[in-house]
Length: 183
Image 1: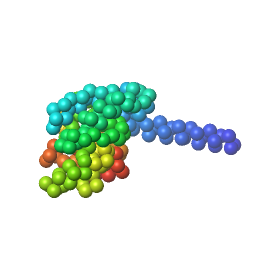
Image 2: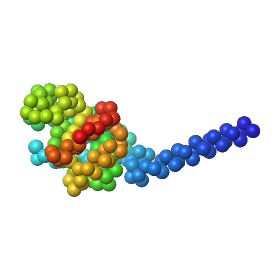
Image 3: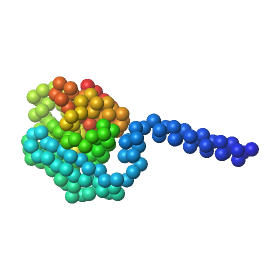
Image 4: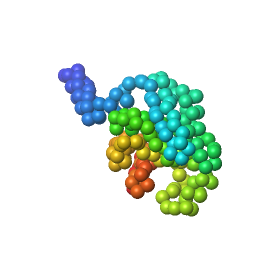
């Protein structure tokens, strides 16, 4: 009798897990379960630079490619580079998978020095005093050819960090901090 109850529990657990996984979009499920290379194509709207990089080879991060991304995400005003949290790149890759696009990500703001962040705070509203940009954990962007509202919806569905929505300024903010959102 105990053996039958144990088997029933096991079947119920497996069935519940299968049902839960079936609710994920196919592309999201594949990105979670398959160790495959992660490639990003980016354009920096302020510097005019473009970058295509395979920052994760399916098994580990590529240090040279992360260094290229760190430089790309630098504070262009101060020309200072900071190590960017690789999970931010993972979020961006996952976001593109959810949106089923490989179109270039248009970077508006990556890393910011404290001086740059203070200058931006003084010049207008909407810039946090303790911004995740100053920690190398945030980016503001849009994706060529994808509506901003769809980018926001996909980012919110990941529940992977902060999501800010700025339709008047034409960008979405994502970060690797706690899951939260604002408009």
